[in-house]
Length: 200
Image (cartoon, rainbow, N blue to C red):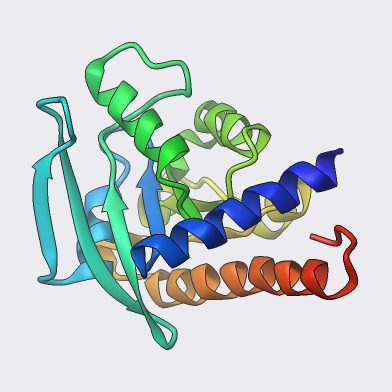
């Protein structure tokens, strides 16, 4: 059943991609973790900011060249969990669950890793295609905090990338990870179509 759910989710992502023409990556996380810096680095000057339909909450959208393709990149309002309290959080959750992004970047502060991982686990359990971005590594290192991100990656079973976005560190690796993560999932769809069994 779990494999069937994963295959269905990937199929919906593929349908969404075919509908709007661009693959989509969504940045999500609590306020002040560096999401906007990563968003601006990925998108450059190609950005629009508008109210989310039916609300006064602004959402920034842009385009980025990732691998050989142009992707849509969306920066969501700050959110602490999938159980929203504020209008901003409701918009972030709605966008996350209804727009079917191919990749979700959960950006967290390296200095507050343990507290923020609870939300990462919520996103994984919701079946979302999560890449964990541990940002502000430079600040954590100054405090003597060491993070073994490969062990965390093995534990969570999702890609984990470390960055210091304000210094431009780790962003090329992040771009490569987005593409490789998507390609891995998309290849899973091709196998399902070919043999008729769920292998994703």
